[in-house]
Length: 176
Image 1: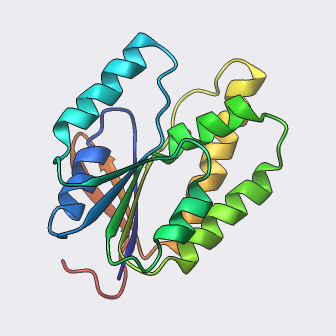
Image 2: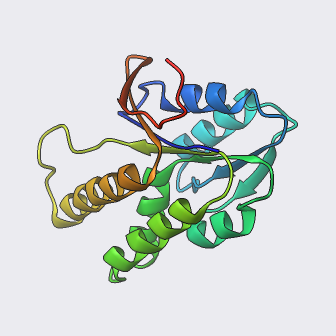
Image 3: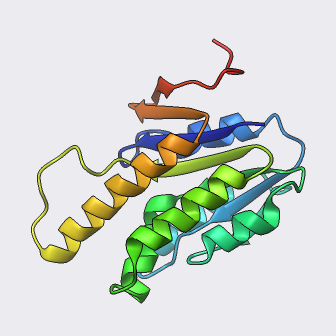
């Protein structure tokens, strides 16, 4: 089975592509990492919930993603994680002084050892201006390092812009 990392900017079509890739599977586990910190985010979450098929299993996982992936490994389900950017944001919010290199390594290990089809969605946030504020720069750095680390262990990496996929890395079993 294949591990796919889908990268792109906000509203690029990442989630739609991830859901399309997952849909042929009969059993799908959707791991949602979002936390509703405000009304606007609550609305975004509600929209995602309405768009997802009702028969998909939902696991809300704002923090313990490595452990959750380990538990779901070899379950026979396609597992879709949306999204790593919000998961990282949650980590920074809840524990800004933690060892992020260790956190990234734990997640990369869980992904590398995952048995089954895994689809990860993550934002590419490092293509614009260097953000103002130390915490914002830390976030951009951590997100970039996380994306690089996961790209190394995934079979397939897709960059999405304007709803169009660009394959950056294809596994040996990937079709044209």
